Length: 402
Image (cartoon, rainbow, N blue to C red):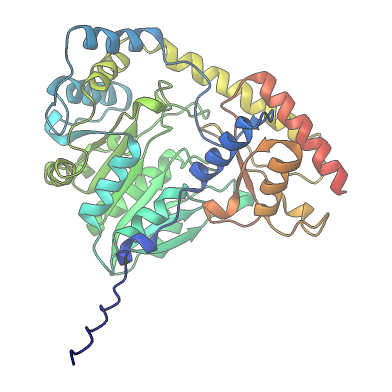
C-alpha cells in the first residue's frame, strides 16, 4: 500500500512589501469617475490634478518631428545629454542652481524620480520626516522601501505652512530623509524662503537628505519663486525632484527628473536601468522644446490658475459651513467640511466625497488620503465654466444637509 503524498506546503502569494502600500486614492477616484462617465453621467471633475490646457503646440511639434526623423530607439538610461543639459540650464536660469548634466537623471514622470530616490536612500528602519497633509504617494513609497514615516502636523490656522522649527523638532538619530513639497499638494501651502533656506541648511549640517518635490515650483502666487537648489553650497544632501507635467501641461507624456549629488543620481540611474530603463525618446525631444523655448506659455497658464483659484474661493464663500485656507501655489483647494459631520448621515470626509460623487456628480478626493480627517481636495485646473457648475452643485448638496 502506497504512502499518501504529502500535502504541498501552503505559501503566501505576495511579498510583504506590496502589503505595505495602498492603491493611489486619486487614481482610484479617477477610475470610478471614468466608470460613471461611461454610464452617461455628467460629472464635474475636481479629482485628479491635471491641467485643463492642451500641451503647447511647439512641444507637440517637437515630438512629431522626432517621430518623422525616426528618433524612436533606446537612449541613455539617464536621458540623452541634450535633455539633461536643457533641464539644468532651465533650473539655473530660473533658480540660480548650478547642476551639471551628470547630476541629472530624466525619469518617466516625477513620481518615478521620487520613487527611485527613496528606494536608493531609505533602508529598513530609517526614519523619513513627512509634513501633513501630504501628497498621497509619499507615505506609501516610504513604507514600500521599509522606512518609518515620521509625521509633522501642520496647523490649518497657519495656512498649513511648514517651518524649519517644526522640521527640526522631528529629527532623531534615525532620521535619514526629509521630504518637502512646496507648493504643497493638497493644501497649496508654500514654505517661506527663509524657512526653506533654514531647512536646507539644517539637513545639510546634520547629513540628512532633503528630497524637495518641486512639481509646482512654477505655480506660486506669492510673487517669490525659490528652489532649494538655489543654496548651492548645500548640494551634497539635496535632491530636487521635478516634473514637466504641471508646468507645461504634459501629464500624459510622463516627463520628470531629479537633480542631486552625482553618487545619488548614479544610484537612481542604476535602479532605473533595471526597471523602466530610458524614458521614451520622443518625450525627451518634446521636453527639450518645452525647456528651451520662450516660457510665455508657463506665465499664461499660471495667470489663469490664479483666476481660477480666486473664482473657486469666492464660490466657497457662498456655501455656509464650508471654510478654506487661501492656497499660495499649485492648483488645489483644501476646504474643511467638518461642519457637516453628523448631518444627513455624514460622519467623515470620505462620506462627503462619496456623497458628492453619487448625489451631486462632483468628483473630489477625501482628506483621509492626505493624512487629515476634516477636508476634501479639489483641483481647480478645470475650465471656468466647470468651476461655476461644480460649486453650484456643491452649494445645493450642502444646503440639503443643513
